[in-house]
Image 1 (cartoon, rainbow over the protein chains, first blue to last red):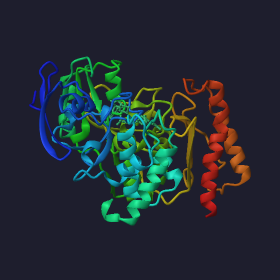
Image 2: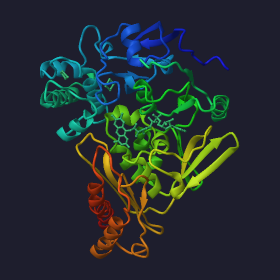
Image 3: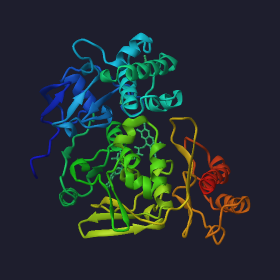
Image 4: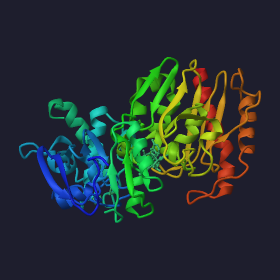
Length: 170
Length: 281
Ligand SMILES: Cc1cc2nc3c(=O)[nH]c(=O)nc-3n(C[C@@H](O)[C@@H](O)[C@H](O)COP(=O)(O)OP(=O)(O)OC[C@H]3O[C@@H](n4cnc5c(N)ncnc54)[C@H](O)[C@@H]3O)c2cc1C
Ligand code: FES
Ligand code: FES
């Protein structure tokens, strides 16, 4: 057998670029990526709501793609570049989507926030002027149990307007 | 945390993947995108001793080779949606992909090959690839083989793959631009399909229903649609044939068999009407 195998009982080294920093941790090779991020790297922004891919709470950007990290084995992410919502602020400044969620009071408990923020950012990168229907479809893989979604849609709308006004911030 | 122990392998070629499967008969499971396998293992419903992840095996590309569009088995729904070749030659496949629920995260991770191999009745890809007359290219210890038509989907949640094989790509013949339609009936914006209809008209018309039966249902179009424009009469006749073709309707938590039998005709009609509108424009 070749060297790319990982046996369960021995913990394995996992190296990532996480929120801009190269990091290594020992993980149980049976971990889901979200479990490794939270338990072994101590980055708790991604949450575990369902572990079936339905709720979106575990969303992070993995190698450029927004990903439900409960659907990835931690060991499959060796060498990946991962951005969580904890890594979005620059110089203490929330990014345009985060700020709009804050201003529109688009979250309460915040459990769904990782999914909503990344889904919104992905939408705005492709479509700077989305309709409400576009926004609703874009966030549809993410479940919120608190807000009733209206404030989230309003926040994405606000983020779109601000991003168009100051495109260099987007 | 997955509770059972497993060995993780990420082969970098098809040959290596086949070799690993041959070394570990009966205990290995392939991962395409993993959107189905990973939660299944996490729920302890599947306990493979070896997980063979195809993410590095180079099967995610979409190319046109001569007059064939080759869609790699691990091409994601997002890849189908953004490929100019798919937009040009297989717009039905792009439309199917853009209707996959679960958000961009699922569209960027779920693969068309994974859906075809999983062969679940309530899913989108099987009927769409059947309507497009796909050829499945399968690699195994004895080399490559090809499967087409109804052979692709032998039974509910049963693929045509044998032990030790992987799906490497789907091939579609480049055909003159044809009208097409796709309709997916679901309970709410984010739910899985209860019934789908995929139609491709033109020289060799196909109408395939998904979700209504254990496997995709190929509606026998007889001479009704060949070379003829869609008119209210031909649509009516085709809808009747569609409804009649569902002999053993599928039943699951999404809908009972009687419901599926009842919606087969209307779902077919909506796909045909979509194609008819393309004809006008
Ligand atoms: C929230 C959510 C929403 C969804 N919505 C939809 C929807 O709207 N419509 C729909 O149809 N589906 C939906 N799905 C199901 C989705 O998982 C599949 O459509 C997806 O395409 C499966 O592909 P995968 O690559 O992730 O499969 P995997 O989990 O990797 O594999 C599925 C099966 O195929 C096997 N396999 C995979 N690739 C290969 C290969 N190349 N060769 C041999 N065997 C292989 C695996 O061993 C496994 O048995 C949804 C899933 C989630 C989590
Ligand atoms: S925890 Fe990953 S989608 Fe719910
Ligand atoms: S704010 Fe609580 S789940 Fe959305």
